[in-house]
Image: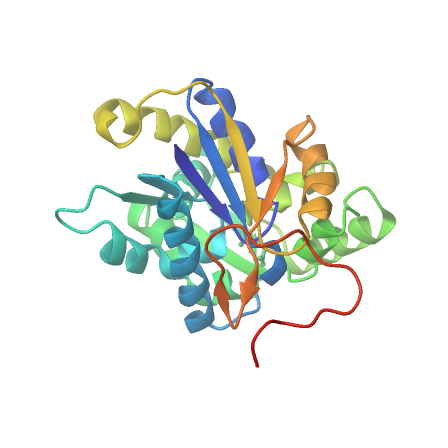
Length: 282
Ligand code: DGL
């Protein structure tokens, strides 16, 4: 089973591409929707959430974890790789930033704009990765903190989304290529399209790279039956409802992973209780 992890359901844009590229693989997606958005959070909280998410996925039998979330990939990927995928480990953790940087460098004529969360921008990871590939490319970054919540709310086709995108593109200035540095932004593709810059969504290229990676490292995920399964913190019904639009199909049951005392609860919590709840013990 390949595990995919995102802060919410924006990463379903990545899951969709991975499923298309690898239709025989079993995929499990964990969206930390109860704690999203991550993009304005501090680094240590993101490291903590990311560790919990990887442990959840490894606990479900995933030997390969794909961090679909740009914010997590930009600040925590190295840490996750050291902690869970070091020498001797049978787990591997891959991220979205290098495929993102590569697709931007392939597309650009010299000036890349990166729209992303505040934490991704503050990390400078996209600038670093793009410059490793081609130091002559100019990179202008801008945090667009309103966009992920607009998508999480399912408002990507509304006037609010259009106004927010307009304003961020104006502030970004003239770039020839726009890298969508956040999982949620491909859902706003209709708003970004036709504005001048070539719009780059890293997800299709990430899926291509993953196919090649699995050819080289088949031991990390044997072909399965193409089964999809889902878990999330937060409200699973809302996750299924909003998520199905982006998957283009109804989601099967979404399994709740409750957060209690700052930790993700292993095992199956009871169905969400209604009304007053008294906890056992004192
Ligand atoms: N998934 C996050 C990312 O790709 C965006 C949403 C968030 O801030 O949690 O950066």
